[in-house]
Length: 484
Ligand code: GLN
Image (cartoon, rainbow, N blue to C red; front, side, top):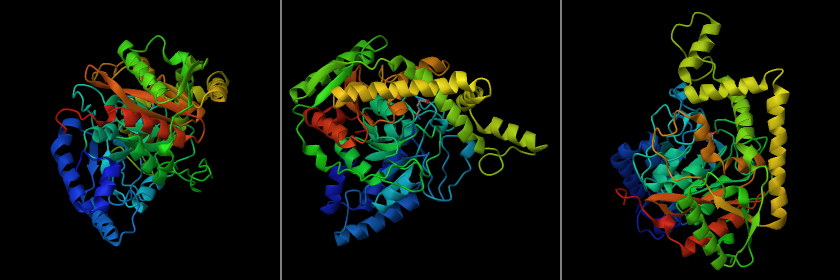
């Protein structure tokens, strides 16, 4: 059962081949048996899962069901889940039970989904390797000595290891796409504003966006349809109808104009990863796409601009964790100042502290213009690069990450090298565009991810382009050894 895709499971449930309760028990047992190797799940919600599964079975019996009815999911532990610990990978929230569900978890539950539990992640979604989690690193199922990517590394590892057919993720600078690439799964970051951020713990609010992590583009289409939509509780949510992503999956790619940004194929790209991407480009040509070279001239400025904007927003967002209202509180504070300083000092890890310091500095009087304002101006240039490119092409194609999965510890002490693992993904968040990653080959047994970037609200076209590629390749169907 665990090797079936979400779409296949939905068909099996409807045909009565197995029940949601059987499927849920099977996956819960699999998590219990296999996850000690990966550390991808922080909290298992067995009772809630079985109750939701039984309710789904009752609905399946009536025949009034949608594609997600009875399908088990894992949620990144950044989404608030009513009455369930919502840690955000941090000691700060280790004791925090959310008093409500995030819009995303609520919508998926309303669509009949079963929540198996919550996945491990970099602390407050800050990282590219899942090594900053308070709950310890996640291991990559393709090589247990390597990172799964981050920050949605738990979700990516769990889906790759067939512990769940799908999981939620969030992407502020690449955190859905980069771990999807490193674990050999499919992940899409929707257009900013497409998926509600309500109840999703904020890292950098102008960049954060939730999205699906699945094994196939078809599954991502089904899941995104349930997650997307206007939400009046999120002031940046966009009031615009959700496209029928599944219906768009049959379109031929004849005449599709694909742009290859020269900046994504230069120095820093691992040669073997580059070769895998070239092979994928040939597949797209065979599928009828017209491939042309383009330029995104401000690409080199994306990482530096992001590492001003994201820390600035995080320093403001994380000021709410003060030891008073929720989260970690130090023992026996002497006074208010001591309460703040020690609660935050004990509750946050090193990477989070580094970001808060950088962000506070960038926003401080006298430096605001030089750093924060300048970064916002650069952000506009980056956005304009993409808008200009989409005058010439329908989609942009390149690698998701410059290298395959690196070793645990390899970059942990060198933040700047770590930050460069998102060099191809970060600009997409700065511009607010949708982007996805799909498996496109292997290098020394490690998956390679191909990134496709679309224009605003072009998720349907992106998903279809990914789906057509998955019809002629089988990279997405490979299973890591030991997790068959
Ligand atoms: N790796 C990037 C960072 O650490 C992106 C993280 C994310 O997308 N949440 O900020």
